[in-house]
View 1 (cartoon, rainbow, N blue to C red):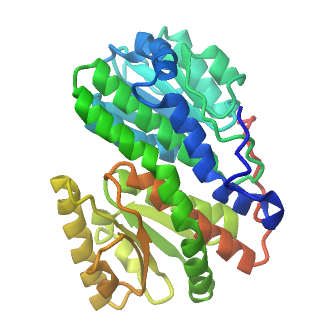
View 2 (cartoon, one colour):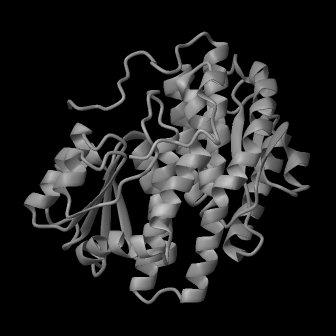
Length: 381
């Protein structure tokens, strides 16, 4: 594994490993992206075993747990939208017990920070026992999963010491996006010119994140006192951004011991709206890709929901794309996300949610690097 470069981080300036690792993400992402850069010679060698294993499969199953499963939920949208491969995302703890006839001869992709997570390793071994081709995305190229899978796609996040996943999560998203581009080309779903555009957009992510981090931290530190006494927080997102809502809620639970739930935005009125009140704020992902009609349609639906919730008296913290003038009018606080394409925005959106979990945890006097009852890798079921 490559360690994050000192050019983007100064370890001595960070009081906690979690905050340091949040700030190490631009370098971790750059290291990962450069390794898997579509069109690069090393990427071709890296992805050949993956192409041999799952390139011709008509369906994929992603098995993962915790934050890695949320990366898988975003990866499902990436793989389906870019590569045209139907994907089912399973809880790793459930995969082993599902019928062997649930899907016909799928490829199986497991995701785990450590590569040793008991449930996910059991899922991989069950897939191997069924004779299925498998791929492992881990942050340890020598882990059990990386060794036992048909092909391995390690992230290059470096050592992650804090229990809450930060840089391991965003680098998983970068690998899943790169995998989607490679499979799209392999399957004839994308022209070389389009792949090059998507590749350039991917390469821009680390610098966009690097520039945005300080302003996000200051804004979130100012916001924290208004949220620290909240009874519960509801995180809302659509499509791939729903996965980020889920991850944001999990970060708050495990870091700050605060109740939080992640929902698809369109599901709020189907029950969870009963929880919405002044002391139960909404965290709403309302970014938009101006060049994507589907993204703009989803955006319009989210904005309408924001208007409805404001009329209902809700407290709203919104994530919006830089330059957006409408979302700030319907939210109490608006965090701006650098413009990117709809799928890559997920990598950027999750970082202020990580910072929110961190600052709320610190304000509540919690040892954020070692939350109670949790371990870095769940190696026993």
